[in-house]
Image (cartoon, rainbow, N blue to C red; front, side, top):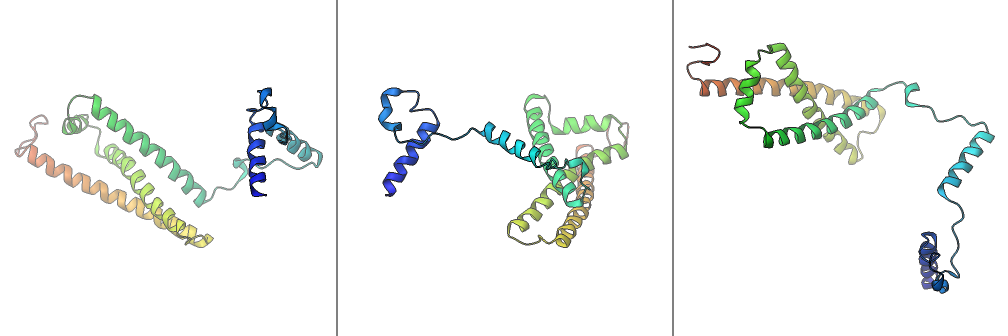
Length: 199
C-alpha cells in the first residue's frame, strides 16, 4: 500500500509541474494522476472575495501600532546588523584599494581639526552599534534557550542591554583614546612636528 501511495504522490507531483503533461507519449505515467485543483492566484482571489463578502477589515498597518521598546530594539538590532555588515565590507574594500596604511589615514583625520565633540560622536557612532548588536545577540541566545519570554523579563533585559551598550561604548571610546595617545607618544616622542607641538 505504501508503494502505491508513494508512486501516486510522485506522479501527482510530476503532473502538477507539467513535466508529464507536455509529453503525450508518456500517457501511461499521468493516466492516474490527480490534476491540480487551483492555482495560488485563484486561492488568493477566493480568500479576498470571502473577506469582502463577510465585510472583514484589512489587517492594520504598522503605523497604527503603539511603538514599544521590544519593537524598537528588534528593528535596531536588524539595522545595526545590516549597518555593521555594510560598514565592515566597505572598510575592507577601501583597505584593499586605497594607498597608504591605517596610521596615515588616522593622522589625516586628526589633521582635519574636526573637534573633540564631533570626533567623540563619530567614535560613539562606531562603538555603539558593535556593542548593542553583540549584547542584544547574547540576549537572543538566552531566548533561544527558552528563558526570558515573560513581558516584564523582556523589558528588563532590554533596558539592561541598552544600558550596557552605552556603558561599553563609552568604555571602548576611552580605551581607543588612551591607545591613540600611547601610539602618538611612540610615533612622536618629541611632539607632532606637523602640528607644531613639541615637548
